[in-house]
Length: 449
Image (cartoon, rainbow, N blue to C red):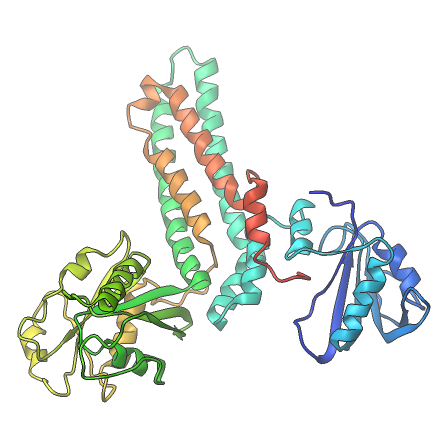
């Protein structure tokens, strides 16, 4: 991707407002702004009041212009920001004026992409920029801000350096020792590998929680027909999202809504009841239920408290994907309160609710939070992406594949495992990244950021 071009875009959201911002970045940003701004900025980082002129010399608007000289700008290039009145017609005309002087409209995320390519930020920080903008809860915002400040990237970089030092020590022992690996080095290598694995496991856990804060949890309500799944979804949503009927099999398709539980974004899905059916439409609904279960982070296995065989359909839990947890829930306890005594002595006590009265709904929310492993609010939370978790898992695979006797028998292979672990972690910062991966990441940004 060429960064020689000057790019321009509206950086404020679509619609009308008191102020709208047009951002311009590139080698010709300041040169073009001197043509369009009747009073161009005379000092770097100083606000200047100016009229803005189009290509025919007509006035577009009056506002504030700011100039940031590269490399001391967000993108690392010369960057100009124009603050005009927030009318889309004015902002679009300003963009056209810059395009008349060889600037082009920026792609989504291109300003932040240039900041990454110019080494102003690493890739995890770039992703955190989007997370700060798109976060749905204040908890996620604060976590994204920590990642954007470089906290997550700094931890990853520290781990990379530790692995590099450990690898260098091993290779020095291979090259310069009379023995393949001395006993002291052998003992030290084993201990260091254990410490590295321990540190990676901790960061993997933090990243998994961070990914859930960023991407949200998918909670699927599943169970037999007439267990009260739609009623439960309506109670959790505090509105009538799903059709409720005494007739079994009313729900034929999935119904979803977004909420948050103590700062964790959650998408809750109602599904068709799982049972044997000859009805073509019902069978399709059941197929979709089974399909959506494969994407769930948590499954609420809902059972009617008055059903003689409440654990019929236990196969729901067995079909849960790897890493997915199942929360057993008894509904209709307003009608069958005795069910609490019957099942309360179990090792994993079910959650007892009434989708009609709302009893136990707060207990269910706490159970969802507990199953997500995000119950404890930490001042050190970071946001992360699923790809970060994958990268950490790959690094762990390489370190865990180092056996105790391989330091002595095949130290060259140990060194290769260290190298592979480093490369896996470098993917997080973007040091080893493909253009396709970068394109996918930045295409999800808003235009102008």
